Image (cartoon, rainbow, N blue to C red; front, side, top):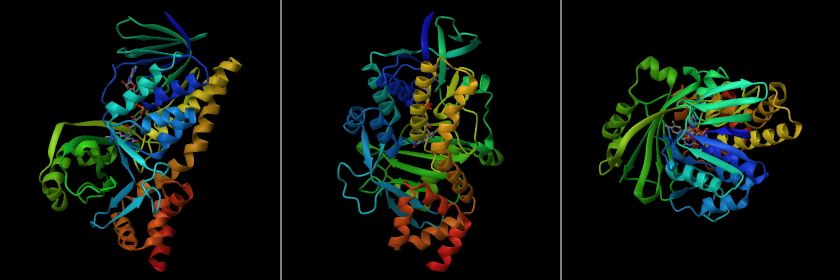
Length: 412
Ligand SMILES: Cc1cc2nc3c(=O)[nH]c(=O)nc-3n(C[C@H](O)[C@H](O)[C@H](O)COP(=O)(O)OP(=O)(O)OC[C@H]3O[C@@H](n4cnc5c(N)ncnc54)[C@H](O)[C@@H]3O)c2cc1C
């Protein structure tokens, strides 16, 4: 029997960030992951500025070491292309100079990024990491949680469980009673290609609202060595209704879409096309209960518009670590006291999730995006406004309001 105050299930971005934040506060923890690292995770591999911000808040050294990682590609913005083929390039910062301190994102295969975080955990003596064991049994006892794997080879007694075991978390379903709802869940697939033509020299990540894929989107995220992550995400409710075969849709887009077939004519598919779920934060959920907290995908916190989950996983992870520290000090792991974690997560991420939910609904009206692209082509002022949307929730609020489009039509 291994005893610990805090046991973290999962060593992905959510679990690793929680453990690192605890370690840098001097609090020991035990982390268990069913995989042995390095391991792959189906993802778009896009890391926003939130990732660096969260890591540097734990310790500047971690963020600096991430900047030096050779497996990632810097990206200076996003290219949105509407169904009418009109597009705009929106840098993370207007008039950027590609200088070290400028805001930017990264694209990094998860096999490398997650392993970087695991290596960071291995530098911390306060973190005990057990790999290759899936925790599948959770028994709440008066003095803590008893956790074990299916084979009965690992037994852990923990005061507090932090479930960070991703979109398919058994803990989320069985203990927190939160289940997949097709209206708040996206089905996503990802492929790696090499040799795609027409990538932007500043590695802008591309979101294409292709007619045949709406209300989902097709993405191309440039990786090092001329590779790119290519994928499609679609609301599960829509994908289910249409009986959509996302793999076939991706291959059709690459082979038959008039623009893509040109860009992919010399491209080669590397490996398989793989899929995974994206639990969206478009519905508020209870993220804590007696002796447990849910973080990252296990707490359904993915941005419903951008599909970004890593940044939000890391935000919630640092808040979970702060809550764990407070619970240890007070020796109080009751459901009532842990509600403070829910309040903090929704105070910080709530406004952004609400705005993104509204924007996600607007994608169902392709003419709106067509209009936005048409009006913003060559319009510096409007482009700057859209550019600020990455940093300012107030701007997203504008974008999510129907009045914004009316004013846009009248003004431009
Ligand atoms: C197709 C697709 C594209 C995406 N694109 C992006 C993107 O470009 N940018 C972005 O920010 N987000 C993206 N996301 C979302 C992102 O992948 C997730 O939000 C992110 O991985 C969440 O991190 P996490 O640590 O919560 O979960 P995960 O990364 O899933 O980690 C969970 C960990 O728990 C372990 N585990 C599972 N069960 C158990 C168990 N029973 N016991 C012990 N360990 C267990 C797993 O092995 C895993 O290591 C995408 C998702 C998909 C599916």
